[in-house]
Image 1 (cartoon, one colour):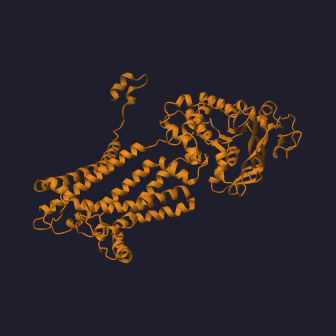
Image 2 (image 1 turned 180 degrees about the vertical axis):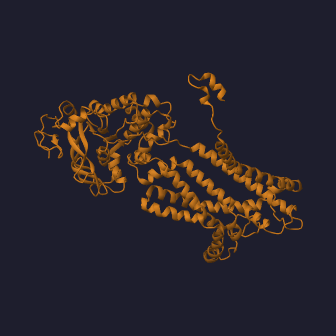
Image 3 (image 1 turned 60 degrees about the vertical axis):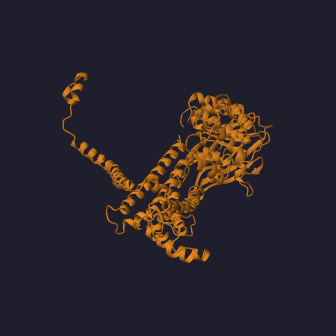
Length: 313
Length: 287
């Protein structure tokens, strides 16, 4: 490197442009940083591979169309059926209930905190809300089963199943409210105050400013918050395992018990399936499907964020 | 406060002993839009600008000039109650709009802001299309009528129509800074205000865009009453009919605050300032 500089140097000792001592520190630091970035990439590859291989073996025994479109999920029976549809509908019903709770309450809380609350209220309420996100999901699960189902829901629907999708979905919704509220609030607070001033100066109220100026301006962040919340709901395991039961059930009735993809993985994975059996491999096949769904969701979210992204000057 | 034979000319409290009005304004036939009597704006315990008395007349451009920190923007924001949005901000003294107390108990700040529009230092266009930026104000205010016509009319008045008429659906962010500022003015016009407050509207613009906005202001003064805050004395001299000069001073408790030095016709102030501080500022000795 330095030799090319020698010829072009104008005056003085050309040798002074050469590196006097090797900079090992730079290389070490760079190496550590590359490793740090590499760990997550390698782990992802590792996970994909470790899911993919047993899944491929699984699909050599169970035709993929039977898996994707079959409506019976009875892996532990002697002549088991591996139709994943009941697990997918279980996941969708419970996630759907969670979204119906979490999006309006989460967005409402975010609008309140960002646009209406006084700074003092915001300072107390936001951390409190975030504490909700720190509660272990197993606690939420037992709260759903012991309190929500057996104290509240039975009074409204006396014939509700002890394990039911409704309580799991409602509590899961409560669990993801802080995620949606906190991220949406961040997005709305990032909207320049000049934009709000512009709206107020035209004679609009706080509600109009929030609805027609701030929310549209923060839309990319809000959509990202929704998708992250939904992804959390789809991937959530403990609440559904405890509160929604472990019975695969092709039904859209939230008062019945349902098994989700995640609770099947958790239950089967902690059971005594022998490694290499078809039941064992089914865990990976379901895991792969879950992975693909989540991947798909994240791709949508990135696309939406790009579409709605606003560059403020 | 204004004496009948010398309407519009008063010295601020902070300029005692100055010769009474050597130059007469021809304010006799003018309609008073705003009248401020001993107005102080405070943030909590801090009185940012103190004891201001002045008038603003219809279809005139009134310029507020003075160095940074003299409270001129703070004062401007109290004209349409934008300061209400800042926790702890309060206005003392009386401030009337066509004789009505702007801070009276029954006055709705939202209604005030609809009549008294505002243009800010940075062009704060909404992240919407050019069309929707204009249509937003009329929509929230329930103004009926053909929106297309209103959009065209507003953009035409703001001297922007010819530049954007084929791009109405494009994002307002695609416009240049000067165009954005004219869009903001068009947006303001669309709600049919009577007064337009401008807080250093050219601060972030280049000289060419500035000249366009200044020309526009003069055209707008035919239909609107304009109050403009500016750092730029030449701008005040070029566009305004009346000028109010403010300074930042330190009081007995060593608290920096704004004061009105004098107010009068721009011509008179720039050719024959009554207060030595005005003269110093205008001639570039400070500020």
